[in-house]
Length: 199
Image 1 (cartoon, helix red, strand yellow):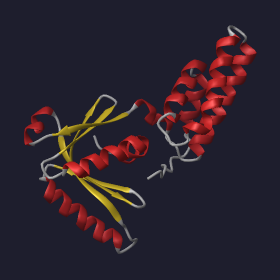
Image 2 (cartoon, rainbow, N blue to C red; image 1 turned 90 degrees about the vertical axis):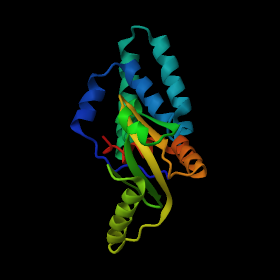
Image 3 (cartoon, helix red, strand yellow; image 1 turned 45 degrees about the vertical axis):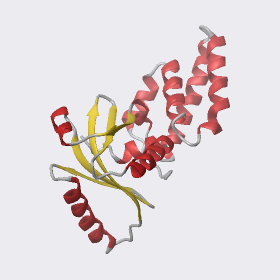
């Protein structure tokens, strides 16, 4: 499940990079890459940039060189489909909840992990009804393209600042929730990107 988003490089991303502090760019880039499976490919380069920036002091030429190299890397990551804006977000899996969580601002969501994508449906109906509704959507979609679903999850969710909190419902099994936790640990940025529409 290492599929990346197809987000195009936007003008606002480019402008944001151009006017951000070099240390901030390096920190955000390091934080982003540390949440991806490709971190090891860039770990040494990030370490060298950090070291060189510390040694540079007020040497503007060195700072500018490092800044341009970081901007080039960020542009390359975006062109590969990575969404660097997700670095500020966190995916939190927080135990199990029941209907009382409605009073705490949680909502119901059903999430299906497929071979090719992540599908979800949120709403006020119970989890079984939401699942049936999503199944019907998937059946209609599968007439156009085949969707092989690997796992289904019946969850409560809540946005809390930059955090997306997911909790198991009474319909979610403990084994399925443990599987979801493992997927979230390995691919939190992919999942956050796909669940961006959960408000």
